[in-house]
Image (cartoon, rainbow, N blue to C red; front, side, top):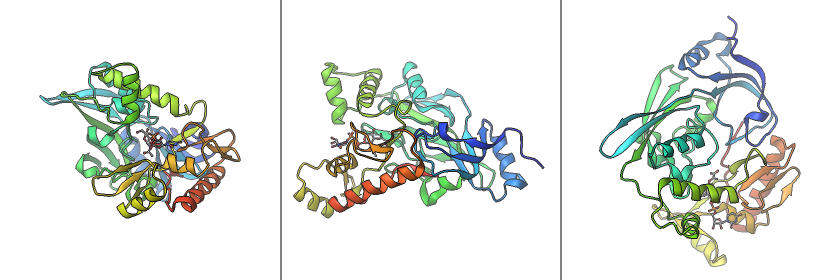
Length: 345
Ligand code: EPU
């Protein structure tokens, strides 16, 4: 039994990851229908084949060739599915691009996702690491999702609490599940509040709105402010390949935080509900001398030290080398261990 014709062999992945790293997938399939997943799951030639679920490739470090099957979620569609007194419920296919989806909700007058504009990637990938920016996380607007379970062949529905959302984390990342390609997220439903209030507590957003003398911003105006901030600080992957923030902001216990402030009183810090304290990885990296510094073809961006950029021709090995150099220097200087945000394949 041959593989279906829509399974590509030796597929070039270099244009399918926003860091533009070279690598090929032994097998690659654009998935537009759950029936394809059912077929691949049962195919005798694929019984022992590793799988990886790919969205927009914007959170991925490709470490050379992948000797397995890449499932590229490519289904499309978005619609209003329900409405009650409090909210609109909007559903989008996993393969929809995130940013155009957010713009579409805003055009329809459904506010709620505006702080998350311009984040690269797809709707289906957004819950995996619980994308967040400027005071809002995906979890705050999430209603439910459908995933195809490659282990059982069933379509499974996850409500908000099932997803165990945390800072850049969800059940889909636990225990390396995202690396085993178990759940393929096929669509996501968002709950967008009718009683909308702008989220402007993040300093940069407040300052941007102030600069335009915007007092009671609309969702569109918040989106415009966020777009302006992002365009100033974050490199466009089309022009300078990158994967957004390369490290998570580290969360340390209260005592470690106190010790660090004693030595570095200007260190930015964000107290968490559980008493721990989140630190700014970008600040730590800048203080360690890595803002705008490179190792080979890989550097930390000159305007935002948390963003690792491929200045041209980098490989996964170059990325690892630079990553380790940054981690070592931050650890030596501050005793803080940085954890990378992207997935390594
Ligand atoms: N900072 C520096 N030097 C730098 C970068 C930052 O000193 O080179 C300082 C800033 O001055 C500020 C603090 O660090 O005091 C935080 O910086 P910023 O507001 O730019 O945010 P971030 O912590 O670097 C996080 C998210 C971003 C998100 C922004 C806005 C993570 C890992 N990153 O970045 O998310 O857009 O906040 O909410 O949580 C992403 O995950 O890919 C991403 C871009």
